[in-house]
Each structure stands twice: as C-alpha cells, then as structure tokens.
Image (tube, rainbow, N blue to C red; front, side):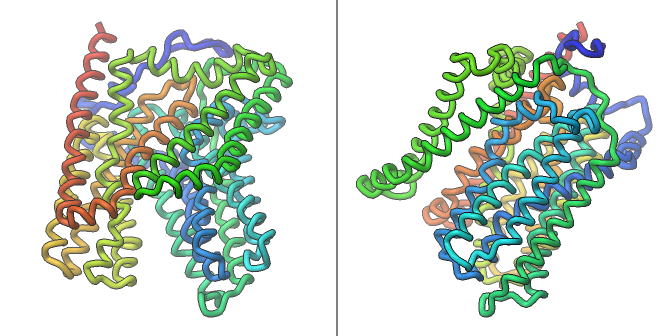
Length: 539
C-alpha cells in the first residue's frame, strides 16, 4: 500500500490482508522464518521495553501495599491505593492524544512514538522518586502525597504501555508480531518479578519488617526501582523511530492542540469530581438497600457509569461550544472507532469484539483464586511462591516464546485456536489436584501446564490484536482492544470466591473450563470470517 509523504493512506489497512501476511510461508524452510524472527534486533528491543513496562504495576499494588501495612496504615486505606492503577483500564480515553499531539522539541528530535515514550518513562521515574520521598507513617498529609504520586505513576505507566504497543505494531510487519509480543511478555514478566519479589527482597535486606518498620529501607528500595527504569530510557534513546506514514500530519495550529488537551482535562476533572463527590450518596444507598456482593457491584457500576456520562457530557458540551476544533475532536476520538466498524462491517466487528472480550476469561477467572486454592490444600507460602512466582514465571516466558515461534511458523489464527483449547483444557488439571490433595509434583505439573498455555495463548492473542489495528489509529485502537480483553474476565473473577463457596473447588474448575468452550467457537468463526474477507480482497 502506498501513501503520500504527508497525506492520508490511499486505502485503510485491512486485517484480513495483515493476517494473510502473518500466515505460514510454505515456500521457505520449515522453521527458517521463525528462527530469523527470533534473532531480529527488534525482538531484543521489545524484551527491554517489556521490562520497562513491567516495573511500575507492582510498585502500585503488592509492594506498595506491604510498605503501607508495615508503616501501620489501616487495611481499608491500603486497598484505596489500588485506584491509582485505573489508568491501565481506561488508557484508551487519552490514547488519541498520544496519537495526535506533538510534544514541543521532543517530537521533532525523537519522532512521534519515541518522544511520548521518553516523556512517559521520565514521568514514571519522577513518580517513583516522589513515592520514595514520602514516609506514609508521618501523617495524613503524607498519605495524600503518596496517593498523588501513585496516581501519577499509574497514569504515566499506562501512557508508556500505549506508546510501546504502538511502537511494536508499527516497527515490524504482521508476520513478526508474534515474536515481538513474546519478547514483550517475557520482559514484562521479568520486570514484574523485579518490582515485586525484588523490591520485597531489597526492603528486607535493608532491614524493614512488620515488627520493625524502616522508612529508609523502603525509600532506598523505591529509589533503586526508579533506577531500573533507565533500561527503558536507554532503549528508547538508541532504537530508531518506526518508519510509518499515516494521515496524522500536524496540520492544526499549536493553539488547537492546547485546546484539545484542555477539553480532555476538563472531562477528566468532571469524571473525578462527580465520582468522588457522589461516593457518600452511593455508600448511604448501599447501606439502606443492604444485600450482598452483587447488590454492591450493581450500585458501584451505576456510580461509575454516571461519572463516565458526566465526563462525556462535559467534553461534548465544550466541543459544541467551540472550545476546540470540531473536526479535530472528531478525528481524535470518533474516527478510530468508526474506522474499525467500517473496515469489518457491523457483524464481523461485533464478533471480533466479543472474541477480544472473552478470549482470556478462562485463565483470568481461575487465576484470581489460584493461590488461595493452593493455600487451602495445605501448601506453604514458600512452596507457593517458589512454584508460582519463580517456576511458573519461567514456564510462562518459555510458553510465550513457543507461542511466538509457532505463530510465525503456522500462522496466528491456528495458534490462537490452540491457545484457546489449552487455556480451557489445562484447568481440568486443577480438578485432579483438588481431588488428590497435597501433592507437590502434581502441583508443579499443574502450574507448568497452566503457565505454558497462558504464555502461548497470550503471545498469539497479542499478535492477533495487533493485526486488527489500522496504522492510522494504532495507539487508540490497540488501547481499546487491550482494555476490553480484561474487563469482563476481571469483573467475573471478582466473584470467584462466591462461586467456589457454592460449587466447591472441583466444580469451580470445571466451570472455568466450560466458559472457555464458547471462545473456541468464536476463534473458529472469526478465522472463517477473516479468511472470507481475504478471499474477497484477492478477488
């Protein structure tokens, strides 16, 4: 496809053509293309960028939670900090700004993707250093400063994810995406181990414990974690900018971009204000109605939906009032969604969105309660940590690279199907373990099968999502896909404990297997639809 240097593409990127490009090449050697892809320097680049992406998450969740608990902070205040990671679930809201807005000096010097990536990484380092400078045990003001720094970290980390996903998709053709996603997942897991187990080890080494809290130990730990982000910064500085031309020329004035950012900031403020100021009302309503977890969930869903509606209304009103160029606003937030539906048509587009939203449901729902299950069987915490957090991580990395190699050799859709089948079928091993009981060899076998299937499926799925994007809207469309793929599984995963209470562990694991069966059908149907589109394109 040819495109003018500063103008629009002559035709949109069609996923069926991109999937065809990622299909196996029968004319070459059986594994030659897979091994060539594995040795590509872009694979190493994604390994390092994946490491950078994996660092922030656990510094908001598990590591920060333990720090706050050691500092004597109440449990309800500790869990409140998980809101700092909301940016990961709603990054698609500001992803259009990353696609559209130039950064002063940085964009001209480093290019569209690297400039935003560098800004995000510097912001992450700044946020972690700010967290390291706050002692949460010194008073309520310190908790507020810590919360603001954690929120900054969550927002910056989500922005980095947007940039890395867009960079990965634009830096290599579709046939390379499986290997790049495998390297990214491997780096991400290593980063999470570094900021999770690594941070806890350092804090313990520097002599902080629940019995004897040391702010200095945690401050030094977080400062060192900020230093690990230099891996990503150095990588960003030395890798080339993707050579992609798209209809994103900076044809608006600087004032137009400033007003666009102002509209986004006002909408975000409307969301935050309406959500927090109405919290008391919804809490009182919950207490008055009573009921269980389902009632609380429905009330919170309404609460959240009203805050989103308020944000949309404010943003829409500002656009109608002429605060921002209407064409610019439409191109930024509306055009990426319309492009997806126009390229596929309503039926295929909704089918693909259903597949995206359900593909990971089997393993995510089970994963929520897996460690609790091991503990209930009688395994000790060290045994669980060694099996899941060490052995399991290694196996999942191997599974990711295996998935990348197989997808490169046999095509993404075939391995996507294999991943769907394995993700559901391996859950039956948990049924066996539940019936056998305390058996360390069987536990390791179960962990190995579960993580191998998850790694393989994840690599193929990320490559599949990448193939669905149009390079004119890379960051926006992939951000929507990646947010959608965990939304329903995480919501259902919140009820894992209740399901276990009603069905028992064996029944629960059979349930997680059964909910994976429709996914297999969706993969088959999506593959058939895309193959038909490819045939129509060739004709």
